[in-house]
Image (cartoon, rainbow, N blue to C red; front, side, top):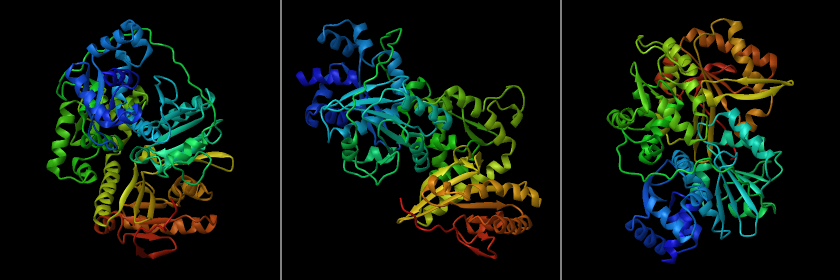
Length: 547
């Protein structure tokens, strides 16, 4: 009975733990935790919730029922309202944790890994503070954990990190980021922090134990293990408080429901790994054709339809003129998962028509970026076709796609001669095979037909590659791939590019192709020409680079 009572207390402080995580944090054996969960579930004091994500295998996460809350309040001899205010147990807290369930699971897995080096721990969730959670080590040092979600806005997340740096100082910051480019960008933002900052790819931190070298410092360092990271944490024990909620509403018990009728907070638990991946891909490539989506997923047309049907039934995906985009409900789901502003996502990406009675047209779409993509739908479809062909050819030739970014994440900002500049490619990709890496920016060109226009299109990349920023941003110098639909325009661009490279003396790894050749050879085939040898063709090549 003691273990069961303590498990109630643990689930009150850390709602939605699974049993393996509960065993690691509590220090009890797995057998004791499994038996106690079964007993509490049979007594109606806790209830399980299924969960899975691309990083977390299917599991069951436990939370207190209404009866469990009353039992815990009686055990601690306090009122139910006082219990709700002292822990993340209110209806508002439950909704937040359910909406962020994928991130919650990642942070719990990281916490479980920490217990192998330091135990016992204290843990605290934060609702609106810049950190997601704080962990107190046995010697009093504190760790702030911050997760950058896949859909996090670059500017908004930078402001969140500024608030983090200006706030209370912990012993260390642990930052989980979704990809290598954002790891380097976040490291630059945290380099001046007053406490040590350590960063890891979220997928590596979740899957690795305390001895895997997947962490690096914000200032740059050899890769470190989690044990080494904890050893470098400073002796500070910040433990910030948050203002309590004005209303401590008792959460309702979660009953069975279908995906179609599920309330929004329950969707992260009800959607499986495959359907979450579908949502992420459609969010990356709005207005994608189902055939291209199926190629990116690596499944047949029938399987694509089976994955899409329940998402459309749940009003998460809209289909307009045969193309797919997230509905407002789907956009809000992903934004809340990643602690991003849902209203900002809707202003940018909403597919809701301005006039429901007007015929479908790009002018009738509410979201400004969705409207822009739909206005140039031929160009948008060509980019989607390229990334789908790349995904298919990569699988055939044994390449793994580490990163494939749409235009809104592929942009890079940099300083050149004391002025802020940028490049805005149509896509960015990073591929890996047996230690070799290939990276590229894609420009699918339709309007550059005059020499002056071609030179203007090339100028941002010449400025970018005149510095070390490409290597700083990616660990290697990505190829710049430019595709023309017209062969004559491609030949003309090669001559213009040759003159500009000679004039500026910039080492720009430029490759040019034409649509018909690319369709025949594929993105990894003999489809590319360079200004240095405009009459020759060769495959996309990248030298091996260090991690």
